[in-house]
Image 1 (cartoon, rainbow, N blue to C red):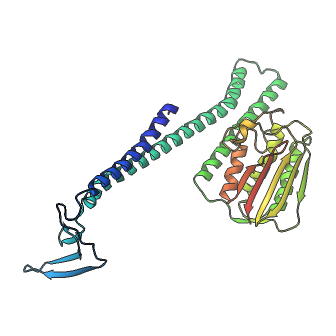
Image 2 (cartoon, rainbow, N blue to C red; image 1 turned 60 degrees about the vertical axis):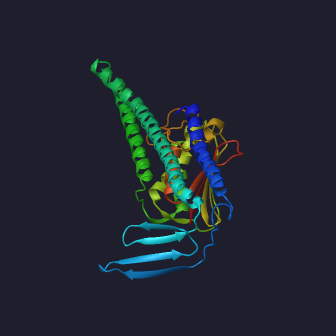
Image 3 (cartoon, helix red, strand yellow; image 1 turned 180 degrees about the vertical axis):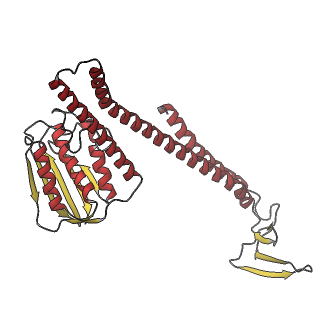
Length: 349
């Protein structure tokens, strides 16, 4: 929907409610400004604060409950048995009864507009997600298709070239498999499907993640700091490992060799805190607000990562981190005021 249409919808919504409320005030004022007592109508006695009820047995064996509020001059009967009510004889009351359904309809219409807009935005996000996922899958598929066509044309007669092409096809196939696995994980987490529920030693988990990251890229040194204390949480160990590994992989994929990383583990206000800080170029300002959304790519300063590398630079790494942490009741944030990137995970103890 365009900006002018959004503005028009907002004006109609709020303007309609304002006009309805103003009309009610004006009508109540006009009706209330009737003749004063003694000028054309008898004064209305103030209603008392109590009600009486009685049951009258009719000749046919039926019954009638009557509730009376004294001091009124209006009687309303609804259904049978009959409910009778005496209220102050004011046109304001009758007008209010007429306007209440109108105001309720205005509120219902506004809610329906909000629901419709929410559904439209959700559909647009889903379509954008699917389109981007298809684009990410199309790249390795195109490479595999090209290699197959090359083989059909006899371009792989050389054994060394054949082995190289087979290795590339295997890499691209694994990339597609990894992308599909992460898409399935995001879908599971979005649907709220249960994860593992076991004691997890975060200190040991961080040690393993650092060792694996150093093996993938020895040119990205990592310093691990574990503060004294208990660092256990309850959750899915494999998924929590994946979250930490993805943060370390993010450094490898988007910083040049020699970039230093610090991984820290501690406790703060009853939460387990994991921080990953690097001294690289950082995340561009225009991407910081959407860093955890799917398929957001930052600048790449290194060659494509090996297939076995966790978080293969497909634009899903940080969104997977956010989804895993949220599923464990925690939060992940991109902290400001640092030269490189500074990610902070907080998990309930």
